[in-house]
Image (tube, rainbow, N blue to C red):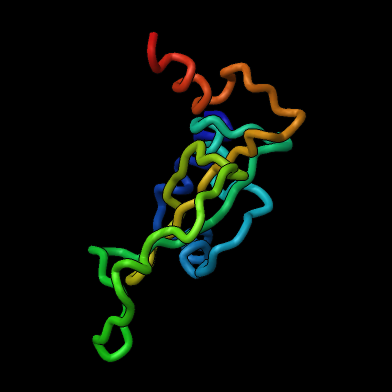
Amino acid sequence: IGTYKYIQELWRMKQSDVMRFLIRVRCWHRAPRPTRPDKVRRLGYKAKQGYVIYRVRVRRGGRKRPVPKGATYGKPVHHGANQLKFARSLQVLSSYWVGEDSTYKFFEVILIDPFHKHREMRGLTRRNTLQLHRYR
């Protein structure tokens, strides 16, 4: 069995020390390296400049918004975007599950910088390949 198979088996054991540590991670932040190298390589990540990993948390269950004392303030007219952003800095390539607790699920998101000067736009990533073959 190769290295990635061992890593994959490790992630199937939810009660191991590694998984218990990852469940305690509770914040939005940029990860220096992917937590699951086997999974991230399958999704199209390459260890190059222009690829970024962020660890995020999503509230479990339906869309229950925490509101103080059950009161909601503001008018619906103010809920829209104030200005149009003409250039997004990063594009989402893919994401994968990292851990969960009773309130949140944690994911790692693979982001690509489309304007990085050392990253060729030749359809070598999964995202660009899908865009190239959209109207074939």
